[in-house]
Amino acid sequence: MTTQLLTDVGAYLDTVYADSYSGKFALGTNLFLSLMPESPDTCMGVFENAGVAPLYTYGATSVTRPELQVIIRNPSYETGRSDAQELFEIFVDLTETTVNNKTYHRIEPISLPALTNRDANGRALFSMNFAVMRPI
Image 1: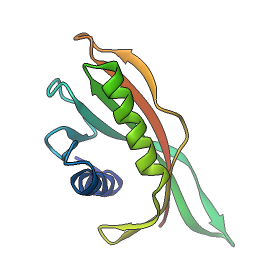
Image 2 (image 1 turned 90 degrees about the vertical axis):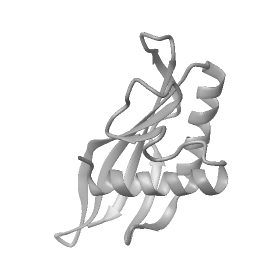
Image 3 (image 1 turned 45 degrees about the horizontal axis):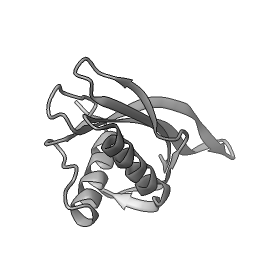
Image 4 (image 1 turned 60 degrees about the vertical axis):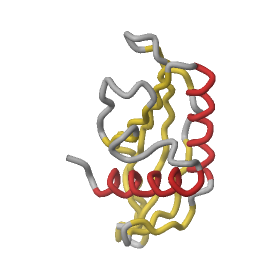
């Protein structure tokens, strides 16, 4: 089961990759929400984290601030690192965007792409974290 945030981010990434990156990552094929199966070798997993407390304005909640972690797996260090940097740049450009009738003020990086490990099959795992800002 996925949350509205993951559903929206998945739809956004699916569209961006289809429109601008020749479908390099496609939802349900090698772009997954809240999981990362053993195959395919090259894939992306998007996970939701709790984030930080909402921002309040005059006693009312105005903005929620969940966080995302994205893990990119690739047999090649160089290709995986390039894919991670590409995703980083996609989110840097995301401001005041509507997905599935929900507004997202920003999805901003809070870490740079980094190799976190290699899995049991020797595939490189790159991780990065993002802060999400959206109205309630």
